[in-house]
Amino acid sequence: MDFEHDLEKIWAPWRSHDLIAEGYKKWDCLFCGLKESKDDEKNLILDRGETCFCVMNLFPYNNGHLMVAPYRHTSSFEELLPNELAEMSSMIQKEISILKKLYNPNGFNIGMNIGTAGGAGVAGHLHWHIVPRWSGDSNFMPVIGKTDVVSVSLSTSYKYLKEANEKYV
Image (cartoon, rainbow, N blue to C red; front, side, top):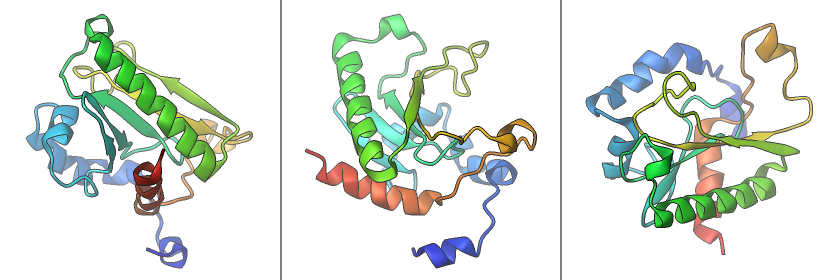
């Protein structure tokens, strides 16, 4: 995919949620379904470890918004096994390194929303968010316009992030 082609489209993910998410409704749990899926590109899965995997957020707050989730279905942080927590931490570290090289962000938001009251969109399955941030990216658009500006398409981002994951040492 080339950038000129991307510029011919207006990407409005807030309007496509019901259309795209419809395909994921067949799964009781989004992350368990992604774990079992065989088409990593279609499902935006960038990396698979022994206990966890990294996937691009289908509705990103910013370019390069990733999620790292354990394969094991759990909503309890304190129930994570030591090897799961260690591998998730290593994968987050790896993804931050890749995002720094590809996107040159000024900082990151890294965190986990636990439970519906804590803001979790998928409350039944823990997952970490990695959101690259740039100075000035919190301007009037998200505050007044209630619009996130994502300047690189998911397919273009996936291509570069997947290549970087495969070459990472």
